[in-house]
Length: 215
Length: 215
DNA sequence: GGTCTTCAGTGACTAGTATCACAGAGGGGT
DNA sequence: ACCCCTCTGTGATACTAGTCACTGAAGACC
Image 1 (tube, each protein chain N blue to C red):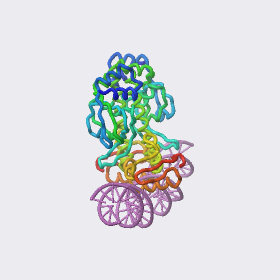
Image 2 (image 1 turned 180 degrees about the vertical axis):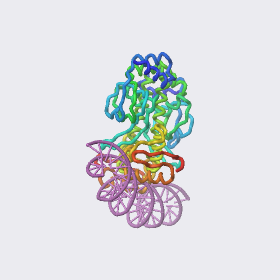
Image 3 (image 1 turned 135 degrees about the vertical axis):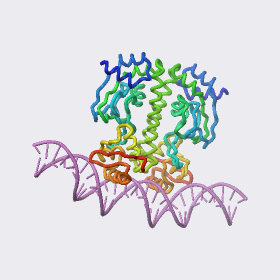
Image 4 (image 1 turned 135 degrees about the horizontal axis):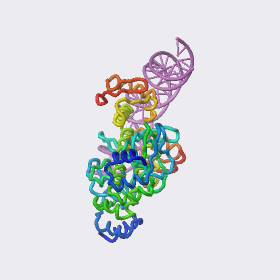
């Protein structure tokens, strides 16, 4: 493993004790992922715990007819909680994960991440914290689908997107519609309304977010 | 603790090793919960891990306007995954849990369940399995809300209800509407349709399920 | 500059669900 | 038996979101 990567890991996971970092450096592999590449597919067997070193992943659910909706984003320093759980039993993934930007992921063989739970306090805490954080994000997503209209969901979606990748939302209306499991025309109309309030400005292929709390 | 309770615990949690069972017996308390009683409230601090010994709990989400929807049921032998996660950091609950029938829960002080993770393999496995199982159930619920119409969601709801408490569904249309975050009239109409296919028979205050796969 | 493709905007229509208003049915208590 | 309360059924109506059909605009490529 290269020096620069060691430093990157150290920086992203400062909470790990030195001996654990050494183990990670020694036994895990780093994989470069291109933009748009699928890191995990529904139905795939999982043999590694996935940590995100750089870039941005989106984790989403897909049904049999190809509909999808976004569950949450993973940022550098996060782990895919599902990969940790499935790992324990060599089970299949229930979700999709795709790189939003090019990214680097750390792959840790299941049997090691399993052992580390007992051996490294910081690893154990990290795993528990990951579960918890993802569970909560999932609950938020669930809330917004269950209780809110599409207009509020769109707002929630934009806010989250701004948080992970800035005020220039480089997405077509079509892509947004897909992630909210809606249709382009409807999203277009809702965006137009948002523009009229001054919360955003629309351009071709990107949306400039001004102030979402205006609404 | 009474003899009968010891036996009940043994029976419900046969996967635990003897020494762990002894610890549970020694340090946890058992609480009787009446039908309809809230075991856990949104915003409440959690100081114990909750295991279900007998009865049935429903775990659901509630928004600020009092709307709710069902996440999943807990049966004897299950644990409240959320209580395990929050436990680790003395955090607040994000969910509601209510007894559907009268029930007995085992309350394990957080610091102990925490210690046991490292000490007892069977406990550790149990906790991981619980997380995973709940996560998956939550995903199923999410799917049904995101991708399905109310008719299918109702079907899914009934199936799940039958699984945990039999073919005599003792619920008013109003209660069902509440748990699906819908309205009584709509549920009545959909149930009527189901009755016409022969899948169920409607009575006052209860629904007799015949064959839900008919639909 | 012209052609092609993708993206965005818009009106008309439809389907599903929620809401309102009301009527009737079932059962419990007195 | 009667009253009362809760539960259920049903029509009318409104609203949200999805679908269809089409137009125009922006850029990409030749």
